[in-house]
Amino acid sequence: MDIRRLTLLPAPLKSAFLDRVDPVADWCIRRRIRPNTITALSAVVLLLSGAAFALGAPRIGAALLLLSGFLDLVDGKVARRGNLSTKFGAFFDSTLDRLGEAALFSGIGIYFVTTTGQRWPILGLGLCLAALSGAFLVSYARARAEGLQLDCRVGIAQRPERIIGLGGPTLFFGAGPSGNLLLGIMIVLAVVSYITVVQRVAHVYRITQGGRPEAAAPPPRPSPALADPVGKGN
Image (cartoon, rainbow, N blue to C red):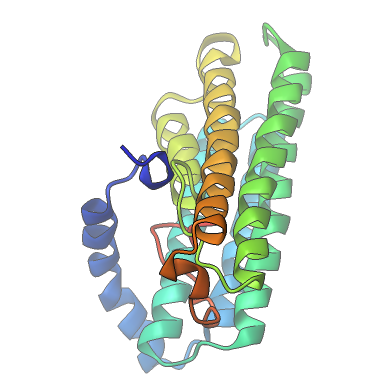
């Protein structure tokens, strides 16, 4: 088994979900809504998600997180189907993604240390920092590889998996008794993020040291906003 290819969301599931977004993307294209506009809206919604967590409303935060992911998906579809992909759009999208993730995990950290009844508030804050740094490393590893003209869209927990893994359970069950569910999610996110980093390092090592054809991959095209559900596979 090639550990570099392991992922939590099967490709057929991603493709099926992406197909259902096409009508929304087509609607945006007909109304001349630009991908960068949708990207900015997605970032604003993600900032609001972090604020909702910080204010002690995890279910609202989760709903906004998933909505932001959906908008992130739509902007990629609009860019591709409308032939509107640009280098600036890819840069703008990735930058706002990082800003949104910082706000999201900061808000969850604030939730742990300010909400009464938390069993391990400091542990929760530490896990948020670990999950955030892991998410940043996952994205950096791909960006650095693509800067070397290598494809690096591999890993068990790319951005779609992280958003769905956090947003889905929290939307239905909240933070759980004494915040235990949200704490458990942070543990899982931190662990799978670092596993993804290892997978990407192993992937780049293999294609650069093994002389495989992948090492001579063409320069990456401007990244459309979404190659995967709720994210760019970052």
